Image (cartoon, rainbow, N blue to C red; front, side, top):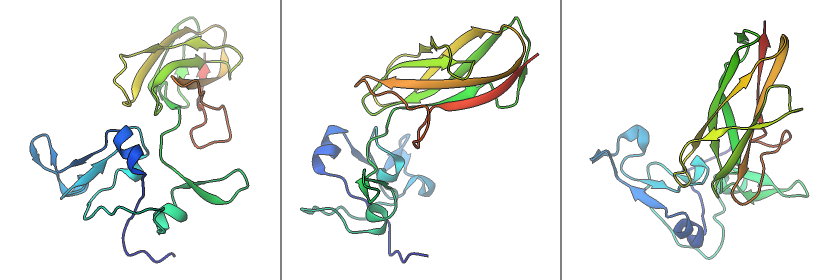
Length: 196
C-alpha cells in the first residue's frame, strides 16, 4: 500500500568500512546470477540481509540519512518512546534450534541430541541449552569461530523421566550481550518435544 520507486538503504561509511563490506559481481567465479543480485550486490557481513542490497545500480554519498521507504518506515526498530526510526543494521545475538524437530518423540533414558546455529555481530561466545523450559542450563559445544559467520552448536542431554519438554537455546555474544528469553525479534528459540 506504499508507493515505492526502488529499494534504497543507508549505512554510514564507517560502518561499511568496519564491517569490511564489498561489492560482489561474481559468485564462484561466474557472473552473479539474477536471483543473487546481478549485476552487483552489496555484501555487509554481520548486518541484517536488508542491508545486503541486491541489483545494485548506484551508490550515493550523503551527509544525512536517506529518506526512503526502507529506511524510515520498514527495517527500522522503534526507539524507546515507540517512534520508528532506529536503523536495523547489526545483527543482534541470536540462535535457533534445528534439532530436535517440534513435536518429536524421544525415549526416556536416551540422550537428546540438540543442534542449531548461533550468530552475533561481535561474535558468539557461548550457547546455553535447556530441556526443562529454562530451569537448568548446560553449555553447548561450538564449532570453530569464523568471524561474523553463523556458528553451529551441539549438545547431548540425558532424558530422565517422561512427559512434555521445552528445549531452549540462548546465545551470548563476545561483547557480553545475551539473547533475551522473550519480547524481541531474536528471542530464545524454543522447541516442544515429548519424552516417552
